[in-house]
Image (cartoon, rainbow, N blue to C red; front, side, top):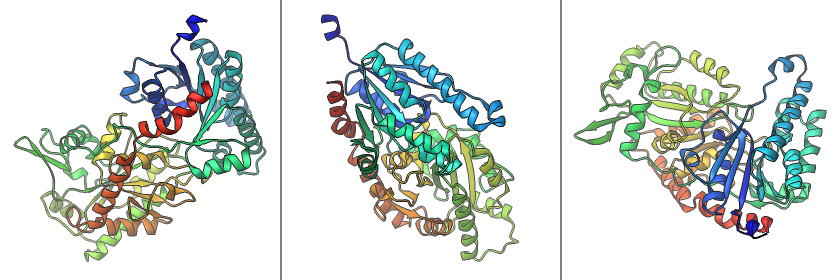
Length: 471
């Protein structure tokens, strides 16, 4: 009994997915270790490295499961592949949670995915005498419904499973007030709203940080995805004094006056984000700027790019879209990008190290979120991170997005590609000096991001529930 009383409390964070692509669960792990003073075991699939602060924290221990891939069987029967995959994942979870980690006081599990995670964690929590908290990011059945339709029998079974085992948890977090209401009214689950907030390593980048980042990304930025474009003419500079956006002179870093506007979007390349909206908006911006400046369709683009490279400025800047993320539809959209004929717009897709991603957001001029939510009840984490870096956002409109994006304060909303193109034209006219609306939104985003950080939100709303559940 004395040994048990003196034992340091322990939590197990469970993610049936790539922990490197699960920022909220990474932040939970850091808070459980640093703010609750617990030992933390993360049980998750591998794939991408989590943030360095996790990997170097002596109280956090990562246990990597192998992803289950049944591509051969799925070609024969999709339903059979789903059942077999769930069964194998269930066994893997039981093995890791029962035998590969020390007994925790509490499991904190990400949902979705719900199958088989919720059942496996509930069983193990009973076997090992631990408590069980679900962190509701979204509803898994709504994501499945995107590909099968809400009326499909598999979706209905998934919904029953998610609701049944979700109600067995000892506590719950959720990401919005709208989701809290849905869980209380229709699921019988009392959840604590734990809003996403960026941690301290999301902040506006200094000029030096921007320059060093663009030096590291130089090859990627100056390499066109298809035929030559308005950035591939820049070529990669051999020395470290000049990038496509910055110059280093006498030890000081300056932003180039005719630099492009840097627009960043992060995507999982899935069906709940219609990426074609951004491609169409970029094409419309390109055509509308050309028409506004009275340029002929037959003009020599190569000469225009050389003029811009040599310092010529226009009322509207070039746009460099950097799209980060991994996902199933990435190759499809990259092929579409290669076929676009753009004069003042270029796209680059890349996957960044977890330490470089906040620097990219802190170096950008505008963020774009295409997330529309399968349930209409969750909020895009990427927007939270953007605000943490003082980056204003143009976000796709859906039912509860205004819990996060305040129109004309820290961002704008759009429903169509034409609306997004209008916003790009309005925000970037006169860039970089004479774009007052963009500067005002940037101030609002910085205010939003600095008003509260994840550690404050977690200590106020999550820590009391964790303590109450452990008892």
